[in-house]
Length: 491
Image (cartoon, rainbow, N blue to C red):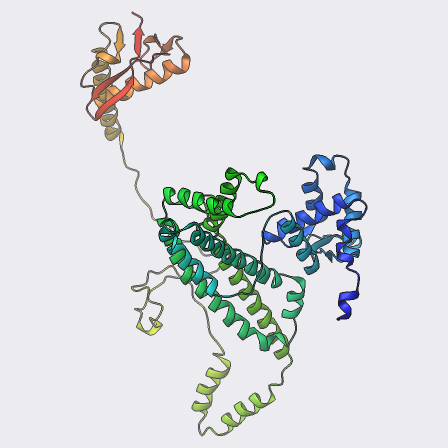
């Protein structure tokens, strides 16, 4: 027997000690956040979450800190000082911590959830799980006509494979987001492991993308009638299984449980209108792990090569210079090794004839640019121009505008002969008249029936500002549908 089997498990102390209800609430909140890939929490986040429960009315932030310290002593939580928001020495001295669940705590919470009749099962990471899920979903149509025993076995295998897939990727991604993984990535030995890990993750992404597309097509093709029939058939199978507590079983509860599991499967691969699918989350987090691995590896290589000896490289370049026969060859080689000694950059807003990035500057046409001298006494020459007499042009324009206004007023007066404008009786209204009438109507609506004055001095009011009856006014530029308003003008 292993000695580890004889040691007490202090990690389970919070389940049956004094104030266990507080510790269990804290650990359950950590576990719920861990399933959502939020692995690190601070004291304030935990306190705010607990205060949403009526049982924590008299709970204080000091008690929350004491409970977190106790869970850290028992090995349920791992504390790391949070220096991301430290802006002063005093804040650094008054240490603020971030907390993460330990591996033992995660397994314990899984056990408690399983004891509460929520079945969660973990397993190894196998690409065949996705292939089996796709094949099982394709068999749904044929299973609806099979016996209760066959559809029951099919449903159990489908849900078991889905739960294994769900639990496995959560464990795998959480491991690479842990503090232990961060420390591993900073070591030199990680360089040898990097390529193998990246290749494994990329192959996993490729399999996930290929199989997910087929699963999504199958899920989208299942009708609502087939889903309801499947829930009923599986519930019949569950009810036929002899149990000690048969009297406590309820068909609606069993069908609701089956429907919830199937909807979880749909959400995993399809997502919803407001939330992305779990597959997209997996792809995003796996790509982030690859980027972090590459970034750490690059920093390690850069640190190792910072103090490397380049003596041999310098000696090779010196021998190449020594073997050259002419100074021209040495100049050309020097330009390749050290670059051009004297060069200038010119910036202009000239328009190129081509946008090709492969076009050489030698292929471009020359551009002439006038450069002004940069001296204080330089002033551009002012061109002398005569002042033109626009008196006649202005007079003609004024006469034209007055004529147009007079014609507009004359035209509007034809609509005011009866002392009122009834939009319901208007026919073939010109565009200019329509715009003026609409402007008057807006003013009347804003004044809510009070007297209004037009730009020509006429007084009027809107008689029916709350009119609900509608009419259609034919205009030159279309048909206007509006309430049948009436504008009444004073003499």
